[in-house]
Amino acid sequence: MFADLHLHTYFSDGTYTPEELVGHGVRHNLKGMALTDHDTVEGCARMAVACAAAGIEFVPASELTAEIHDTELHILGYFLDTTHPRLLSELAKFQLVRQNRIREMVARLNKLNIPLRAETVFAIANCQAPGRPHVGRALVQEGFCATLDEAFDRFLKRNRPAWVPKEKISARDAITLIHEAGGLAVMAHPGLNRNDHIIPELVAFGMDGIECFHTKHSTSMSEHYLMIADQHHLLITGGSDCHGMNKGKPLIGGVRIPFAYLERLKARALERRAKNQVRTATV
Ligand code: AMP
Ligand code: ZN
Ligand code: FE
Ligand code: FE
Image 1: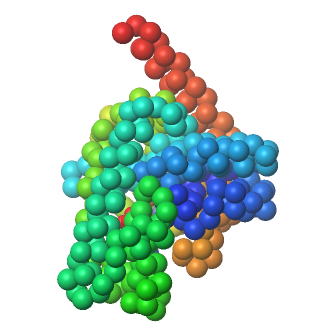
Image 2 (image 1 turned 45 degrees about the vertical axis):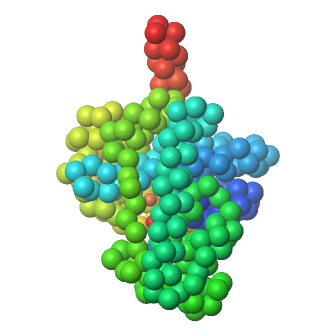
């Protein structure tokens, strides 16, 4: 029994619908799937329905872009209460930041005599959490670039002329928000960022787990983070980080973790919910 706890749909920067993603999950024999779209839980309701129909355990989640001491990191929130008012209002703020960032990127392109319109990007994105891939697709659709790679290489990559840095939530605030929404905070793909030095501080903030298995982790990297998980008593997660057809072939199926990790996560999330309820009842 296997699970994939890191997946994106077209509600952020993936290309699949929740239903298509679950279809792929069925083909790869997954028994558990988490939807971790960036800064949104918009796709969770449909994904839950599709998973239920396929007999797959669904984990509602989101991936937040955070920072600590000027180091960027991605924090996954698992088993979120997707109706939690403060979670939704904070996500709405991140989404507004993303939408303003698209306008700024388009303004920079306009200054380079590329008459792209923000509305074209928003129409392509058709979701609350638009990002650079949508600007890239708009550049291709309107004939300003031949491929998405060209769009990133010429304009959208870090330090390229249309690149706009993203405002980020502090890691501490991200972890607190996830906990308030009944969820578990997990450090995403630590091997990608090579920032092990921040782990003890994240643990001190109450971080619950670490993503040991990821498409871009080598076997030795995964072993390294399993050791760190053991040292800090962290939960272990993993997933493919599939974005659909955005990056060539879909990554789903490439990283599958034992279902038991999902069960441990779920047990801990239930404990958190119970604790949150006691706290609410006593204030
Ligand atoms: P954003 O969150 O708006 O900064 O966009 C980040 C997303 O852009 C990543 O999750 C990838 O999906 C995509 N991306 C980043 N670099 C590239 C690239 N060189 N080519 C294609 N997609 C990319
Ligand atoms: Zn992404
Ligand atoms: Fe990420
Ligand atoms: Fe991701």
